Image (cartoon, rainbow, N blue to C red; front, side):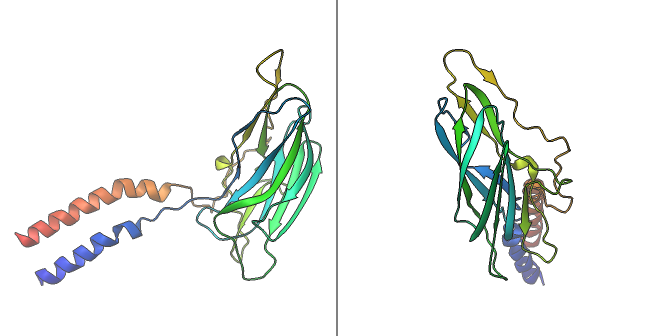
Length: 219
């Protein structure tokens, strides 16, 4: 009896790492954190989607910028999704990537598009993602499920600081785009790191409990 119980406890002990697996949320990123062009120079920014630990089928991306400092010129389609469309308007670039074969999906991260910008004048500004769950024309990452769930975590989205000719002479600054609505994440989205944080507290207690029970059985 004791031997059987001991084996059960040992099995549970080795399964603990699998029971507390990490869950990471989906978000949008850039290939860099800063860019430093001179006035009238061009630079590129890769738009990156990260699916976290999920399977995804599409993503709508709304990249916003200050047209007083930058001019979006072209968008080159990335290779992460097989089908990509884009549109440029003053102050905003929209990019949509999606799968074309039913039953397929994407995992991991990759480039959806590469945007070429022209720096207009000296100063500092920011590229960011318009991400508001209460607005239809906003960034989304769609999960591979029957409900086409939007799983983007807006708070994890990256931004890109652009320093145009900064370092000499007078300069001005742009605060970047500020969404007028509250950029909250979908209620159904598993927040990144919650399971990991639970394991930090629960795992040591379980380990001590297992050790105590095994010592009691042995002694």
